[in-house]
Amino acid sequence: MDTKIGSIDVCNPTHDDIGGPPNGGVSTVQNSSPLHSITVSPCEATLGRYLARRLVEIGVTDVFSVPGDFNLTLLDHLIAEPSLKLIGCCNELNAGYAADGYARSRGVGACVVTFTVGGLSVLNAIAGAYSENLPLICIVGGPNSNDYGTNRILHHTIGLPDFTQELRCFQAVTCYQAVINNLEEAHELIDTAISTALKESKPVYISISCNLPAIPLPTFSRHPVPFMLTPKVSNQMGIDAAVEAAAEFLNKAVKPVLVGGPKMRVAKAADAFVELADASGYGLAVMPSAKGQVPEHHKHFIGTYWGAVSTAFCAEIVESADAYLFAGPIFNDYSSVGYSLLLKKEKAIIVQPDRVTIGNGPAFGCVLMKDFLSGLAKRIKHNNTSYENYHRIFVPEGKPLRDNPNEPLRVNVLFQHIQNMLSSETAVLAETGDSWFNCQKLKLPEGCGYEFQMQYGSIGWSVGATLGYAQAMPNRRVIACIGDGSFQVTAQDVSTMIRCGQKTIIFLINNGGYTIEVEIHDGPYNVIKNWNYTAFVDAIHNGEGKCWTAKVRCEEELVKAINTATNEEKDSFCFIEVIVHKDDTSKELLEWGSRVSAANSRPPNPQ
Image (tube, rainbow, N blue to C red; front, side, top):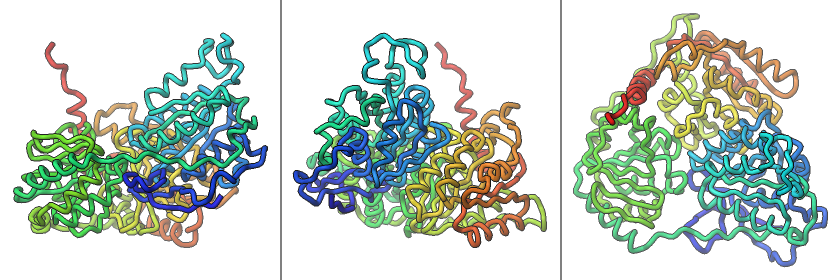
């Protein structure tokens, strides 16, 4: 079938586009040939091959899996699809994290596991994807269709004749669940599940009985008709009223600012946000979990707004503004630094993906974020006062003190060297922990990717996510910054990175424990057993594939290691263990930890 790759515009009803990348541009499939004449051979007219073709159509060319007896036949049929590659992972949790990372790059990801033991193992990763608004197709090989309703007890269950335990767990962390135990409903259920994931930008669950994937059925004898997703459309009267009210609110302000939030991704509104920034001249900041969604080379960019741990001079400009527009914010205890932001509701315009609220006054529903921002850009008066104020008080950050020869390496020196590695051909993944704060201070060149998981904050996420992101973007070199405690949770799938020939660079920051938790509440449980991390990766490598490791203790060794990783080992998976002092943390983590600790330890309200 002839297809072409196009760009998505979900609000344009003339497009048959599907899928969606993190910031609006996406690989999508549009049909360009007469479907009625296209048939497939009988061996391809199976449920398994149909599912495979649907995944390829939406842009999924890699599926992350762990085999189990209930999904083996399904895996046979996924492998048989020429355009689909099966990536075997070491455990289900990492398979889910890999699908998460893949979805951040491609706009949608998929994983395949087995019934219950696999499904409940991957559940944590699916919950994280749900919290981050990522479309992810979680496919589970289920029991034989003849076993449903028989009162039999099956293996891989908790020993009860009830097969719904897994389903009930997934209902809380997916937007749609399909249990396929007969062929007649399979076509409709698969299409509904996948289209729902794309429309809602949330994970879905598909369970397929183990005896069904190989059975031919006339329903699957033709190539699937491309998805035609009904586009979301703004209420034009609502748009006009919201733009009018917002323009009046902002145009009378003296020093307004713009702040981008993480929900710009699901709203596909990053370009519209930049359009508004260009038109308004306002100082432009991002919330921490929106880093990478707005170009940091923009002439009015002032940094990351994160309350007391913002980048230099950003919080002062945002919090002293007399009006601020937040596009797609999430104000949780982490992003608000223990609920300590100095913001006032009456000064704020809050723009959510389909709703606009202005101060303490009116709210407008059925208004899509990107339509609103584009409309506002045409009505706003240019006012660069907030940016001029920022420019006036800004003092360039000093460089870390130079280490003496062979002096123990400091974290701020490490990140100064990581900064110099960044380009349009790299992407940064930051693990939960002090890397959150150090990576926020990196200045991203144009085209450099950036991802971290702030809302869910599951330690260990970055190992699997790095695998998935790198698999989705083979032409971009991923630089992952991972703490030793997090790495120990999910370390096995370094093996899969090497097996797939990925050229990722992992900086393993070895400081002897869970540093982020130390700064929230210290105790002996935050100290971990030290590993010989480079020897661990060497053992996994085992002479198969391209892998290079180094252990560094001082700046001289770090410089040498980075030079090797970016030159003679540029096509290898590179693992650099960086040994630092256990108390060497960013000042931002110290401040953030104390404020989050205070929020966590609030006494109960009087009853």
